[in-house]
Image: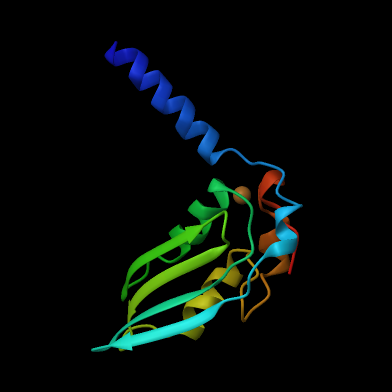
Length: 127
Ligand SMILES: [Cu+2]
């Protein structure tokens, strides 16, 4: 029974990271760009264009930088929440980093070369 549960959870996990055709939902992307700073720790919430769980991995991995304590992108809402130490990293650097791995965001357009190298199903409709 344990094995069955394990298989089921893997199957659900795979569905979660697989790419759906989300071109219809792309049209309703809400543009958000908001930052709250408290005691030198900022929480920025902004829009990052993308498709799926693989995009989420690429975007979040790119933000494993000194000073960033949390980066959580949601493939449905296309919104990322980043917590960071403002003495170590700036919002501008964060948004440039996301663009450098190919993702359009509220401030910067994703680098074309990085976009071209994205997995087929990650080639989201650009902003
Ligand atoms: Cu993707």
